[in-house]
Image (cartoon, rainbow, N blue to C red):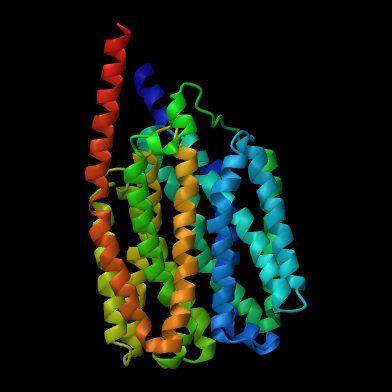
Length: 415
């Protein structure tokens, strides 16, 4: 192998263990965020609350992410990324321990607020961190590995947390999450390499006025698409336990198994996105969204057949699994270097607007109609996302052309 080939091989090699540590952080964050979904029966029984109030635990967590992520990301912009990750994990461990010890619903809500604040900034830091560990041509693969923890949380974290809660109580599930966070923080201290996140040569206007950045508009449209996709998904998925029991006819003991199947299928989507995302970053997203739409519509229509429901839930999750990864990769490919970190905060906010809004919308739909209406609302949101998302590529190309024109004009004026 020649020197040039060796240099290329070194440049595109994936740092698996550091990326896996970031993924582990995402795993505990996502498991904790959605844990109330699987613990719904235990929470309602012990705390004497309703199903919409359990959904509110998701909404409050996500609302905190929405409100706090962008300002906290801006406030911590000069903090070294590795140090920031460690601090955020410590805060997250405290939040989950407080949840485990919560004597009532009000304290549990406070714990969710603290966890949401740490969660939002953590997500905003992780994907740019992963991008800085690899060559540009391995961007989607790196993001797929780093964010795969979210899928593993669905495959293993949420179902295991659900089983643990059913066996020994929901408090133990939160306590276990707190312990895992401490272990991950210790490994990050010992192993994760630091990265330089400040862009020294970024134009002054781009650094201090995000709106002036040429890539601002396509990034905002992409974020709006994320909101619609996540809103549609969360509207249904937040109450999936109630749906599979009340509408599909499964037993309460079957919920953990359904969640396990759903999460395992999502791993397929992550693998596909990791392999194909670098090659087809634009074409893959509409294909995946179309698959999600067809699957959710099928779930709603085939609710009387348990086998059909399981097959269609599997397809829904398989198509959906790769969507967040492609969104993250598209964001990093679309945003300028100067806008990248704050754009990562915006997309985190967008995901959580959808998550919190979906939990709230789902509760309203149940109150106004019934659990059976949830798939219809999800399909409407996803169709709107498919239409809006198709414009991102065109807007990004225009932004690059405008930026190139501005650079030529500046160089001409200087000469």
